[in-house]
Image (cartoon, helix red, strand yellow):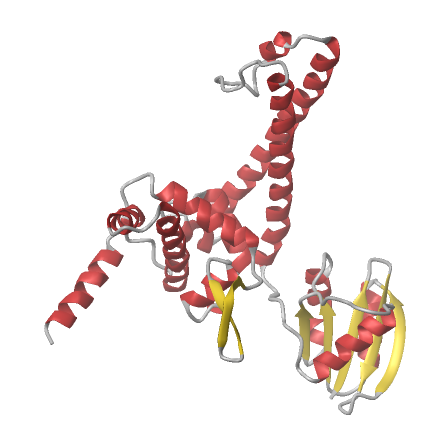
Length: 340
């Protein structure tokens, strides 16, 4: 078995090949183009494994090279210390691959993986829209003009209330930016709505309270398949909804969240806020926890986990959400226990 470490950049990629004993067998550099990358990998004869770090080109590289090696590992970026060159980085990857010390990042040859590009673009637009709104609102607050009025961001008449030409000019540019960004945001939402008809998992998950069209697209785009997660607790960790104990020498040193997907954390927590505004199983769980003395924060966190678990269950089963399922299941379990 040969182990190939690859340090990929937009212009060139560096390869280091090591044998099973750790001896360096080859070093090479190639242009980051499909034909040149394939030519090098194919020139390494026999059984081989390849590793490179997660980055903006990861999915393209994965699809390009996955069928050329016995195993392909896309790994989490590592903290680099000391001297750094492309050869050193590729060599370290090859050696860590050889001893099984790399933490893999999920990639798959699936149409759903392409949703990640759409999700990222939507996130950027929403972030810029929020920033532009904050800057726009600040111009009015500086001169004590109320901003909590209906249609504040859409009303051109508000511009006339500003006191100087300079302030009005800046406000006009921001007003135009807001209109453009809002139009782009709606364009993304239209694509998300089209995906409900295009992809069965997205249509399925929209049946869950609190999980609308946009959130469902984000969930499916990040998770891709529910079968990556054997149990709900694996998803809780990946979605950063839980903390793990930090232990050393038999003592606990606080708790820490595992590395995961901030997108899922945001989606499940915001979905919890939406779900508890209507009558459903999530709201009933929230109310029960509050009545038992739990804080609002703790109750909402529990609902977020319940929604994540529901997403996993609905997706794996292929059946639409049933609001009474949890209550029925709990009563059945209680009945079984009481019969003993």
